[in-house]
Image (cartoon, rainbow, N blue to C red; front, side, top):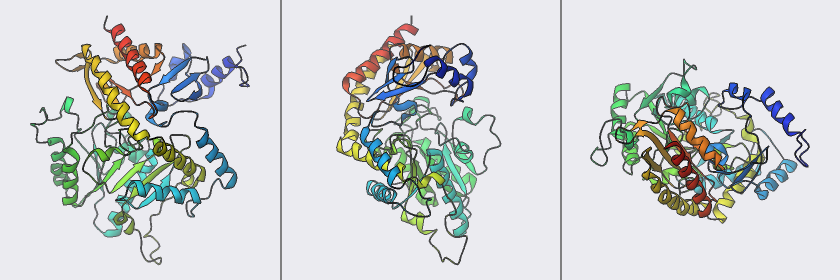
Length: 460
């Protein structure tokens, strides 16, 4: 018997219960016939500890880029506990104090927007945005129901969100998906969809959207959704001219722009929101992950007053309000956690730390270009992608066996990184880095050192 001191459980029994009963996310459980599942039991700052007592530096903020203020924040736990005792929940048909305060805080941070609708996850936040566009098309009589989405972007696991996701392997076996979602090309300069090179390309990846709107019929296209920096599709920041061109097209054709800030929001890219790197003002912004640093589940769809006003009508018209509800959008403790997370981000100047440490991270990552398998290094702030290739000249992507060995070798050095996985056919070859915004120079050095060790090992 192996017992964790003071924890009240037997380690071997807990592992067996995991294997027997827990359905992990994104995992082929056949592997647990010969290996143990990872069970994380404790976190403090940037460090997490597994059930066997092994410690790791977490370079992906909880595995999905969301624990932005680090682990062990007692003040967030205290705010949540206090709110749970005072008033844990009431359905979103009524307000509660922390939710009202959070709505006001979000519109202060997003001054061109004015209304916040709360729900439970990033997928759900995007679903709300899609529903707003669809219902608006009916209420206004425009019929503009189609929504454009970008190749390689990810917007969620629910059916409409998946239908708007440009990662083909995530969609396989779930067809038929929802009608009315139309793809346009990605914005990755390293693998330009038009075979051109920036800056002599005329930013065709943005301009092509006008051609697609015309092809689909301008009278049918009501919205477009993009991540400010493509996240799970390979950490791809568009060039500076991209979003102003895209917004100009949207305005000319009456297309609402949804900026999916689920990953990039709250400091990840070195600004509070990813779109702030660009001269653009979206009509809707969706938020989750970093909103409460994943201490509680909460998301938000924040919209302009113009979007909101479509749903303000005579009460006698019983079908003219936004007929939607999210049960856990009424969880007051989630809003309390979000308010405290934002306070920490602001009081500890973590957005600026993300910018400064991000600059240092990219400076250190450039040293890895010495390895022939490093094809591209890209990102913004504390959000970096390293694309691994077999041949730098041809840009042939590394095969998944080699890539898996690389990730395992980094883990051997006590560092957890992310990876593109079962997303884009033939292009699941990017190492993802997204450390918490509290990361230090020494911790960045450790992350880069672990990656260097792994590259040396697989390059022999």
